[in-house]
Image 1 (cartoon, rainbow, N blue to C red):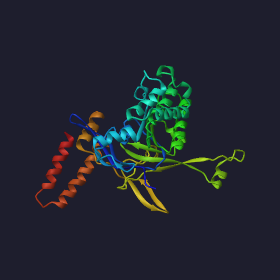
Image 2 (image 1 turned 180 degrees about the vertical axis):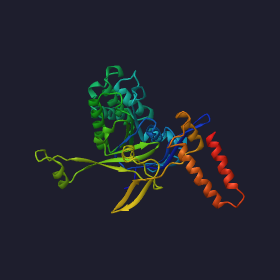
Image 3 (image 1 turned 90 degrees about the vertical axis):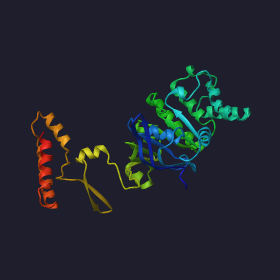
Image 4 (image 1 turned 30 degrees about the vertical axis):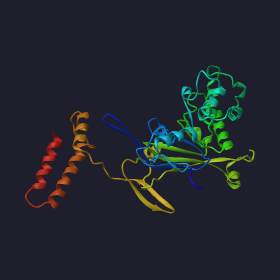
Length: 361
């Protein structure tokens, strides 16, 4: 099956005055048609930037982005406008971005179709179906102030589907409701995904979203680092994992994977790095059916003279065993290497002496 969405080495750089901020750096992502996917990450990780790019609200700086066979990096502005109107629907965290407060629920749902010139009879019929699906047909004449936060988000989902898009994007759609309402909304996203065959991507801070979607991608420092995939156990696995007194209903398990990009790079989870004491270097060993990663032992990081002086100042001017003392040994070894590699005349020795004097200033 051809993927519905493909991101390859996606890069987004924001320029503010003379400052460049890299929001996405080499992100890779593939989404299948009809998939319900979650994207999680800390604030500033790049997940909202990715969502804006997928929705045609922004363009990537480099890379490749294909949605439903359309290359969003190369299309014109007019084609991108059409894409936003007809092929993608948005549900935002802020109600003000989803609904018009002076319109009723039904009028909000009909508004996008009115802009597109849909016939009145078809417009009313589709608005009725959407409001019935989200459970708010009885509240169709209510304005924004007469609806609860959860009801407003239900109307927002109906509005997002008004023009029958193939892609539904949610940016923290449960961020302003309580936990019970959030679970109801995520259940509604799944129901709409299955009923209308939508490809759905939800960005959130909530790690519990894995229970409501097919797959969760974690973004860290502008690149996807890991994924959690939900799957249904087979009969044998279910027998081993379920209690004999439990029902035979389908049991879901969650498999976690670390992502490897096209260049072979991977991001180790921070908790494992801290637990194993992994800093800048590791060793790799071939093991049975895989690769064994071990923290490198006996290697000290190279310390610049500026860092050594800063460490000395913070210690009251006294050399520390982890800073200047080790730097001096490194400089002595460097001087020895230079003496061996350079011609006679003391050039290597003189340079090493100057460097050493610079450190001790």
